[in-house]
Image 1 (cartoon, rainbow, N blue to C red):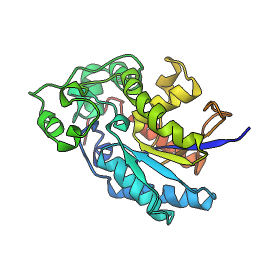
Image 2: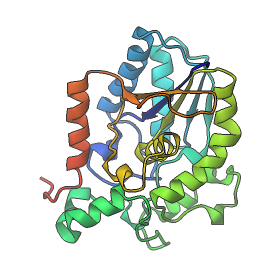
Image 3: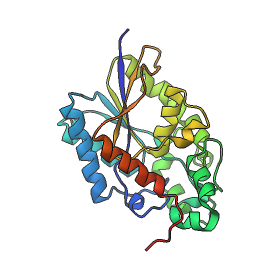
Amino acid sequence: MSKRTLFLLRHGEGAWNKENRFCSWVDQKLSEEGVAEARQCGLLLKEQGYRLDVVFASLLRRSIQTAWLLTEAMGDEWVPVVKSWRLNERHYGALIGLNRAELALNHGEEQVKLWRRSYNITPPPIDESHPYFFEIYNDRRYRTCDIPLEELPRAESLKQVLDRLLPFWYDVIVPEIQKGRTVLISGHGNSCRALLKHIEGISDDDIVGVTLPTGVPILLELDSDLKATKPHQLLGDQLQIQEAIKKVEDQGKAKKRN
């Protein structure tokens, strides 16, 4: 049985990751650390002998920048980068721009964990009074989508992320994998978690405990039915990866910002 190789990658650290704010659909660039993470990811894949045939990214620049930087580091700038809003980060609605630790201080760590990690719970929706509403919905990139602008989400649960992601997965990404091509998805924390849940059959309850650090490639080996042949692997220094996971998990703990 032939083996298919798929990589999921949460983009390198973004400016608002560093500030511990819900970034979501606000279009932030990578931080200096994020640029380094993206390049290191490309070098790691090259050192381990992997070659990419096609990369998929969201419409958000931190995802696109990551794709460009890692293919450059691999010496494979020619590899196509295909972009879609369906790979965008989860829409955090009215929480966009807020500091996670301060939110935990005001609403409790458990509530923030539910907003961040649960499968079915949707945060309060964004509306026109929100400071980033028009920055998002007046952006011309969202007039290129395969659905009307007014049908784009105003807030999403992880389940809703998976629902809007799956058509692109089956119609565009899966055919590339079935051709035997090595695919990398330069996505976001929640678009990658949603796909991981789908591919590995992770339960609604267990997905709460899945945390993905920035800039760490996730290797999935799939059979001809696109089922995982073994658990996914986070590639790189395992001690550093565990430290990075803890850092992400600690973002939702109640702590005043300095």
